[in-house]
Length: 395
Image 1 (cartoon, rainbow, N blue to C red):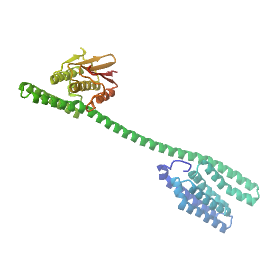
Image 2 (cartoon, helix red, strand yellow; image 1 turned 90 degrees about the vertical axis):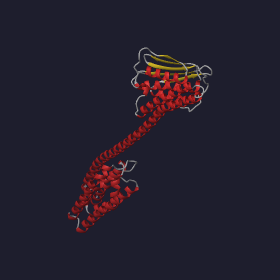
Image 3 (tube, helix red, strand yellow; image 1 turned 120 degrees about the vertical axis):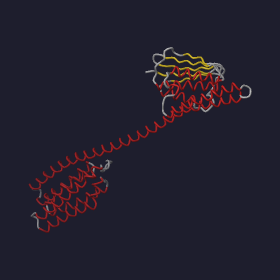
Image 4 (spheres, one colour; image 1 turned 180 degrees about the vertical axis):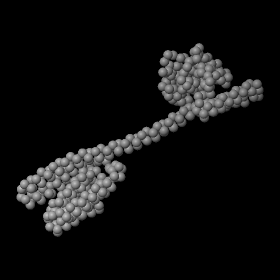
């Protein structure tokens, strides 16, 4: 199609042999009718039939590909111009050749936009009118031909424009369906990428909060045991026992991560007990007392919320152990009507800017809390300790 129309659909290309058959049958039928009709004389009839055959050859050689693949532009005008010249000559020799309009007029709407196609239809329809007008001098026969040609032009233009609109609309719908399918595939691809990125982020957080922290504790305990080995073998033994317990707990966590389960501390126990065990382990490893403020009733929370709050507690205690040099840590868990709050506060050295280190801890905590629509606030000042406060809404 011309004029910016979409290319023909696969359905049109597949059904194009039906049009070929229609064109071939009409060409043969009109040619036979011209050859056997009288008048005019046999030489005129033969010449007209030969011109109709030339139209068929011109169609096969040049026009067929244009019609099949919707190629417009100057090629369409060239094809229709040559076809018009051959048709006009055929009608000039034998009026019965005008029946070829039934195979020529539809092609105008197959190749051109509506307005140029209507102009082509009028031009083809006018050929017989002009001939009769010239031969009869504008008599009744010419006026009858003019009326008939006008009706043909109107009917063909209306039907052709309507059918062309249906084809163009169908092609556009097909293109829209293809575009929607491509968009759906793109959305699916982006969703998969987002899912992969989210899973990588989740695994990074799990590894940081479990394996990395556990290995850090094991290293610190082994270093403490090595330092106490000569002067206090009993203390060294206690450090080593704690290192073994920490390694075993870390191994359980690693297995839980691999199995995509909840944290090992939460397995079979509520959040309050899990936070208490984490705090007890912190006390055993560092000797720093932990003051726990927990609700008497065990709050029932969604598992994702419990996982996030437990990880925040673990990370806050790990930071206090590595950076704060605290004398005491307070852990408070509070359940409200519409939210649950976890607060970890130490009396250590504090900081004024972002804490040094690998940089993942606080960012990982914030990301985890935001995943459950919560907020994380970290406040600190030199010599006044650090407070980590996570608040997660409960719906």
